[in-house]
Image 1 (cartoon, rainbow, N blue to C red):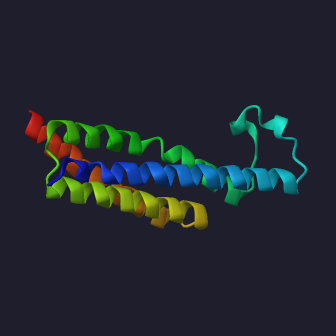
Image 2: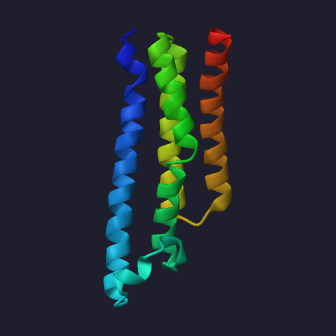
Amino acid sequence: MQASAILQPVVVLGLWTSAIMVWMFIARIRSANATKFDIQDALHAKSVTWPSDVARVGENYDHLFEQPTLFYAIALTIAIMGHGDQTAVNAAWAFVIFRVLHSLVQTLSTNVTLRLGVFWLSWAALLVLIIREAMMIF
């Protein structure tokens, strides 16, 4: 298996995070323009009360810098150590797919139960990566 196989999901998640950032930026600017909001009032972004549909995109963007940072670290560790077998690659893709689904559920719906379920599935995929790599390193 090519060493880059484990890095492909890393790049895809990076691209997805970039897409969510653009979506958040556009949603916030549109909301600000629609309400004649003075953008300077967003000096501290957390103090701004955005409409729910806009806030959910911003919250998802924040979430893409929480759990996924551990994914990036473990995927890079797997790549550096040369442990990127088919199981690791499949788990990495599963993680990315579940994170994209999590983003879509969070940004496009208010179904917290579904979002939580997808979140836990992404954690399961991430735990496969972490536990397998721990077993190889130790």
